[in-house]
Structures are given as structure tokens and as C-alpha cells.
Length: 159
Image 1 (cartoon, rainbow, N blue to C red):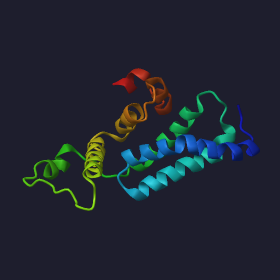
Image 2: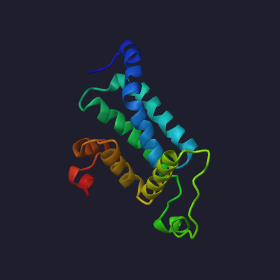
Image 3: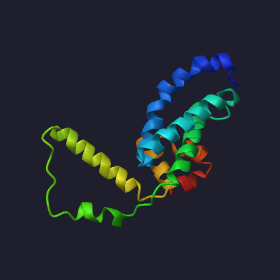
Image 4: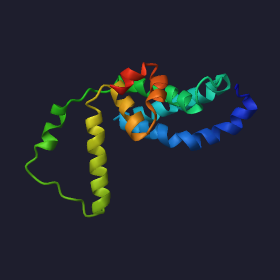
């Protein structure tokens, strides 16, 4: 199923609406640096635009888009500083209880704090493991689709 240029211009807004939030969410979970997040997403979408007319339909469109996003995000994640549980020692061994900012609501503060903590722990994983976890647990992508995206055996992805 090759997409012609005319069809591509009509199809791209639909693709962005359907997959844009997920690609953005994955980049936000995998990458720590805001500029790297933006650059990785931009690289991914530029590649999708540039290559859409070569999509043959051998896989699902979502798998093809996730594969492009996976490669772009992985390139940027390899440049970032590596973290370990020891990096978060100060945070977890604080003697004081953090105060909830008055300006923010309690629920919003808790949600933001939990989100930051989960993201921090994800950075303890290798970039490939982090992406695999995010695809499966956050994006709810099947193991078979993740194995296609990552070009790995499904058993390796499950591990």
C-alpha cells in the first residue's frame, strides 16, 4: 500500500492525531532533556513525512511509526547521562517531609511527584529496556508488535 504524495498530505494530519500523543509520551518518558525530547520527536515525524510514500503495508502503520520513533528516541537517549539507583539516594533518604506547594492542588502535586519518580526510575534502565517497558506497560503495545518495532525476537522482548 504505497501512499502517493497527494494522499500523504491528507493522511498526515490523521496520523498525527492518532499517534502524536503516544510518540510524545514515549519521548517524554525516555528522554530527560527537554531539547532532546523535542529534537527526537521532530526527527521521528520528519522521517515519517519523508518516508510515508514508501510504506508498503508489510506491517501495521502503527508498528512502522513506532519503529521510526524508537530509532529516533534511542539515538538521543544514548547521549544522555546514565543514572542508577544511587543517583536518587539523596531524594529517598531525605529527613524532611517535602511540603506541598500552596499554589498547586494536593492531587496535582501528588500526580506530578509520582510521574517524576516513575520517570526517574525508568532512567535506571538501559535505553532499549526503557523503550520496551514504555511500549508495553504505558502504551499497551503487544509483545509481537514491540518485537517488530525493535527488530528483536519476541522472547527477548518479553524478558
